[in-house]
Image (cartoon, rainbow, N blue to C red):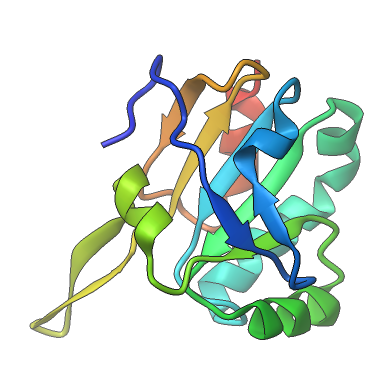
Amino acid sequence: MVEEGTPAPTFTLPSDTGDDVSLEDFRGRTVVLYFYPRDDTPGCTRQACGIRDAWGELEARGVVVLGVSPDSPERHRRFKEKYGLPFTLLSDEDHEVAERYGTWVEKRLYGKTSMGMERSTFVIDPDGTVVRVLRRVKPDTHVDEVLAALP
């Protein structure tokens, strides 16, 4: 489980462009790493569009935003194009990175138990330290929580 004050686990994942992206690529910048269940679903779309709508402020603060879900790079590309998302989406199809961050969890829905992505966000400082952990975030208030959590 990743906690505040600990080094952010490093990773390399394929992006919506098909290129590999590493957390290390952004050393020296603040990174907002957010995990979400699935592209183009109601909650995930509201969450992503909230970030898009606050992009000017995030960009002015020099923040890098990386969204991570189990969706494929191609599905990410379509989602990004459909909603005009200006940030990078990463594909964690085997949920290895989500497991390392503690966001691949057991979920219950209508009495059934399954594994899935917990909507969580990690703010990582320019040195690679996790400075804020936001777990079980609400799609409609996510971007406000992120903005308040930025150093």
